[in-house]
Image (cartoon, rainbow, N blue to C red; front, side, top):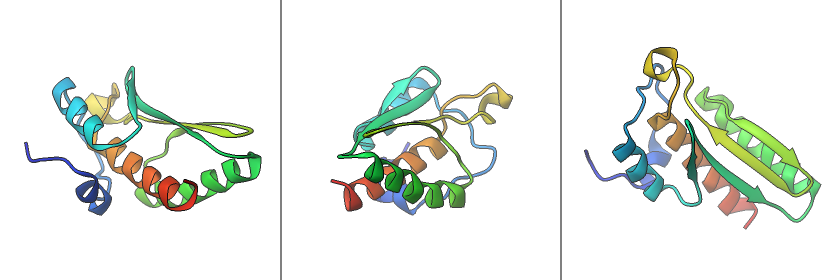
Length: 118
């Protein structure tokens, strides 16, 4: 497997019918995507903000990107926090799992946060 890095993931697009990754691959991808952790059959990261306005601005900013990728996360939104969880429900013969698509989107979500909110 080739080296995984943020710049490579930022340039990629989500692929339909992405395959589930194995445990070793997930560990390698997690090392390349800052702040994300495996949470069962998904990857997750909590983003913190100064207030509700910034939290909602973040949700709206990532909505454009994740819609363009056609890969939608579970979002939990509170006053100054947004928990983002990605998984690929179509991976592993529709049994779900974590795919490269999850890491592509996680990298793009990180980029939005870092450019706008940190």
